[in-house]
Length: 290
Ligand SMILES: [Fe+2]
Ligand SMILES: [Fe+2]
Image 1 (spheres, helix red, strand yellow):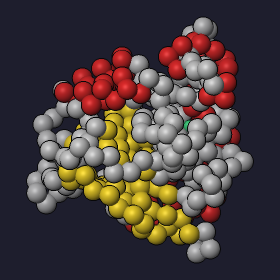
Image 2 (cartoon, rainbow, N blue to C red):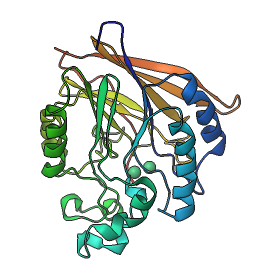
Image 3 (cartoon, rainbow, N blue to C red):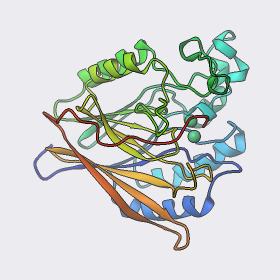
Image 4 (cartoon, rainbow, N blue to C red):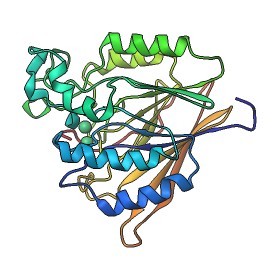
C-alpha cells in the first residue's frame, strides 16, 4: 500500500433472513453501504435463521445487488448449516453444507481486492467433537477452529503478495461477550493459532453485539452486531466500517436509528498495526445461544 491508499471494509454479520430479519435495516443497508465507497464487503455468517431455501435466496438477492458494485466475501454461521443431517459429522461433512453451498459455493472463501487479502476460516460445524460442551444449550451453537483451518489460512497469507493487508473472517466471536463467554470452544489454543496466521485483523460476529478489541494487545478484532430483531438487551443494531491505513486499523461502529430509518456513525476505536500496546480495549457483550 502507498501512504495515500487505504482499505475500507464494510463488515456486516448475522443478517438472519427469515422471521427475525429487520427489512427496514436491510433496505437501508442496500442504499447506504455503496455510499461508503468500500473496497469490499464482509458478511461474517448467520445469513439465515434455519438454513431454509427461502432465507438463503433472500440473502443471495441482497448480496447479488451489492456484489454488482462491490466485491464481497461470506462465511457460514451456525444457523446456516443443517448440522442435524450429520450430527458429529458421522454421516459426512457434505450433508451439513449442501444447501449453503448451493447458494454460496464455498465454505472457505478467499478474496483478493486492491490492498488486501481476505480468507474465511470455518468455525461452524454444528454438533461436532471439537466443540462439545457440558452446556446443552451450547451444543450446536458453539464454534471451534480446528488446527487445519488456522494452518490453511496461515499458508494463504504467507504466499500472498507482499504488502497486502491480511484479513481473517470467521463467524464465531473470538473475544468474550459481556457475560465473559467466548463464541469459540478451546479459545486459548485458537488465540495462539490465530496470532500465528499472520492476520492483521479478524472480522467475526455471532454475538449480536458489536465490539472492537485485540487479542493479546496485538491483533485487532472487529465484532459486528445483527440486523435482525435478535439484538442484545434491546440495544440498537450496529455494523462496522473497518478502515486500514499504513499505521492503524480503525473500527467505526454505525448504529441503526429506527425512528429515522438510517445508520449513524457511533464509537470509533483505532489500533496500531505494529508495536501495539498490550491492552484489550473493548469486547463484544451478551451471552451465547445465537
Ligand atoms: Fe446469529
Ligand atoms: Fe451464530
